Image (tube, rainbow, N blue to C red; front, side):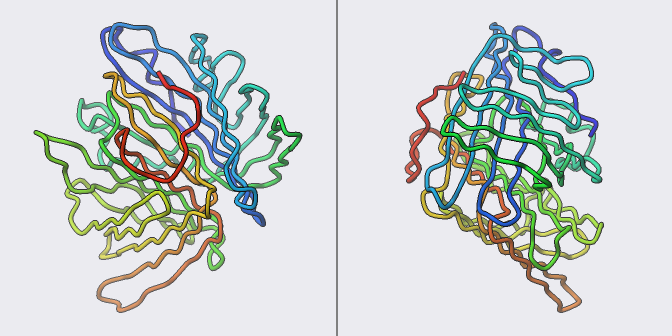
Length: 326
């Protein structure tokens, strides 16, 4: 988990955003948590930090959502990010967001997943969005307490820890993470797809990520974007992504009714995106190998996190939380 904060090294003149986040999901029930520690900085201004707490329960409908923004932002020694008294670092996460609070520990036997295929791309100006998963498959212990009296005991819940940053968000993006497959308990999927606008035109979808099964990682996508197909909405998606070794993944995601969260994400240039996220989605994967004539199918009843980011004002059915960003 070789992650480190980027925001302390950014010039005052520059604009940027950065996010450290984690998700965890219960093994037997459609209950999950999505916690974010974020940085937003407009050109010429000081960076500000925000804590985001979202807890999903598909049996209850709309998730619990709260957000807190503060100027008390730092990158502590031995940790990744601190906002007020909330801290996130290798193996631990603590925080309070309004009346919600959490104290968690996590561990992972997986190496960091770097979605971009080349190390130089993390140093270069382009692409403008960088992302990694310090722990693409993690196990959590601890407690999340909510103001309605619920106390979630995360006893071995699986999930992940992620990190992204950049000078601007993609014009449109999808992030998909999947665990707890009935046919392969140790398998996981972590893939991000994006489109950007160049000279007024939207590029095709580009996917980057990996699928892991039985300890073997298969790289997915690539900068060429060839062979990627996407059909997406706030209620789910169908993705087809080529991978290494003539492998193709087809993913079908279904969001349980009214279980998605809607958030506003501020862009460093003053614009805004709207984001729909469900971290207890159903996922069905088909893994196909050309030349072998074989395929395998995996299903996860509620172990997927599905996020769709879009420009503010696009129509979707998910209410936005009453918190601004920036």
